[in-house]
Length: 101
Image 1: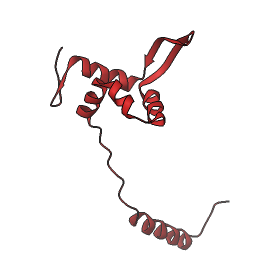
Image 2 (image 1 turned 30 degrees about the vertical axis):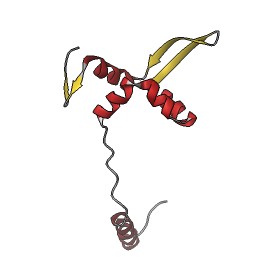
Image 3 (image 1 turned 45 degrees about the vertical axis):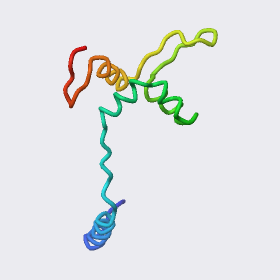
Image 4 (image 1 turned 60 degrees about the vertical axis):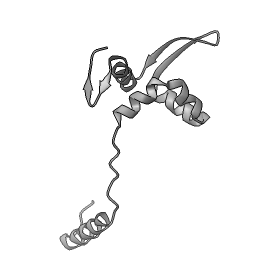
């Protein structure tokens, strides 16, 4: 089961290689930490300028858990990446260097 002749294998492999060669290059998304720290520094403006769907997406990215009691937030647990960015924003971030306070 699953056995194919060498000739058929080479044909299929060649076809797949040609298809791969014609695929567009993957985009290289980069993380702009300076921009992230700036946006986090004014989270209220970020949320105010976002649509409802964008607000929900932001909250899902920055918070792992939210505790509610009688319709009030009583505690939050930040997502690990968000906690790191908050730490960078709090301690200072200049040209790729983290500086104290």
